[in-house]
Image (cartoon, rainbow, N blue to C red; front, top):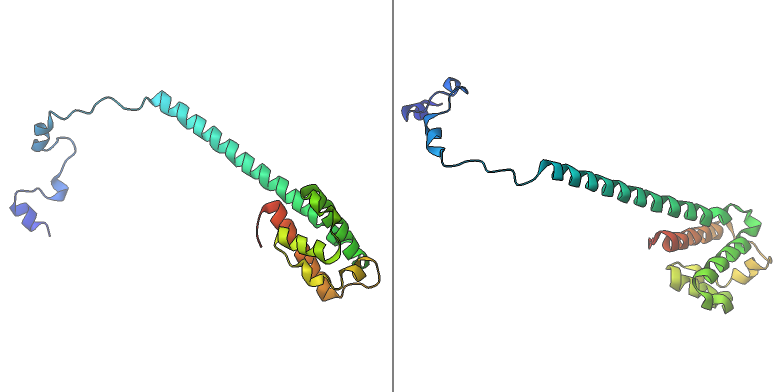
Length: 167
């Protein structure tokens, strides 16, 4: 395998020794390693600052996620009410959230209110506009399938408002 290299005067790979440099190294005498371009103490100082910045950024990110997660859990608490009170509880929670964020929504009622929620949160509350007032004032309860859909729309609005996620 190395016969063609050995014919050119190259040594066999096992004959190389590390004690003596090959003769061609002497011709490299004009190449000298210069001084280090980076002060080691300065590099360690920068590395320490970068680690501190990374730790602060990580803690800030975790803190933000924790705060938003707690707000979302608090947002979802009205869903734990009895089925008979679901619509009135969600209506109160939605009203409170809307008045904090959008004071101009104070006068909206019924279908315009649901359309406003759809515009702001990207949900589909307007699909309940025909039954909303009957459910709200206790004449009827939403069927289980519509109650699940209503809860899903409420969660979607919470994710949109708290996390900024469109889904």
